[in-house]
Amino acid sequence: MRKQILTVAFLTSCAGTTAAVAADIGANTTVGGQAFADFGYIKLQNENAAGQKIDAPPTGVGFDIKRFYLIADHQFNDVWSADITLDAQFSSASTTTVTTPTGTATALTNQNSSGGVTEVMVKKLYLEGKFSDALVFHAGSYTTPWAPFVESLYGYRYIEKTTTDRLGFAQTADWGLNATGKLGPNGMVGYSFSIVDGGGYKNPTRTKSPDYEGRVSVVPVKWLTVGAGFYAGHLGQVTATNQDFPHNTATRFNGVVGVNISGVRAGVEYFTAKNYKTVNNAATSVYGTSSIVTATGTLPVSDKADGESAFASYNFNSQVSVFGRYDHTKLSKDVAPNLKDDYFNIGVAYKPLKTIDLALVYKNEKVKNGTNSISGADANGSYTIGGANGTRDGHFDEVGFYMQWSF
Image (cartoon, rainbow, N blue to C red):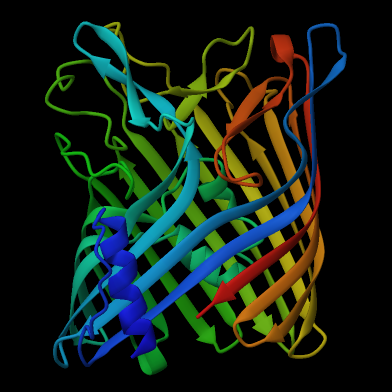
């Protein structure tokens, strides 16, 4: 009852209502949430054209609330249910570049007169119909097939996003239709297939044509999981205003193998992606330009990326574990093949309560021969790591205490 009352009060406050409201939202409703927080020291140094290492934001000491999810599920009957998941984060006023028939324009994605704002977004909002274990249907903003699946194998999302998510090659939720299910003895074969807008849950854009994402997984024995996935579409960037422009199609293929046995959790993920992003030009190797559509009327540059991620952890008991992960990504194989991103973390975790996870973590990242922008990965906001002239590097180090609270 208390959680139900708190949820209604929170939702009302998000809507801007000044009156205090508390109400019972009914039976068959469960409410929960997650919060990710950290406190630590970051040092980011990017090399200038002369090779000098220059301190860059977010260098310094700080406390971050990266995410706060508030989740409400309601069961209508044995078949139909619904979910809403609110995603709250602090964000400075920011802009995005929009392609139009006459060129490009800068549009605000959020604005606040004080220079920053706490955004409350709808991450998930869907109707679910469970017709059998083999067919569960979702309509609305729902979990995407790949990145959250790998998160479940990795087990340390509160420490870091998965490699495709943190580098911008995957979304964790999107608006559209989805079907999931488990087939075979003991649900050995699982699948998830989505038809989505393509812009992610923060951007419910009406696009000219939908994007497609799917995943199949197999659990041949209890401790082993093997999965493969794909994505194809325009990432929400082709609309009625630019549909006649030449454009590319973004594609991604993924594979993962994970084991979880006797306290050992380990896995390897591989991805290859085409036409997600590219560099602005080979001379500077600044990564992040769209490979889908441009305002010039010419075919956008085609580019490829691929990478591997290996993770492992060991639980000494129900409370203490150690973990580590290494990612290696070639960001621009066709245009700037020397542009690479290497990331790793190591740490020790402690679980004092069922709902609390604590960890002491060290993170290290190096972008070689160019620059890349990481969004919401380590410092609750975008930061640029790398060096000048397409020949210099950038180095990121962090030591911090991380926490996850689930309820």
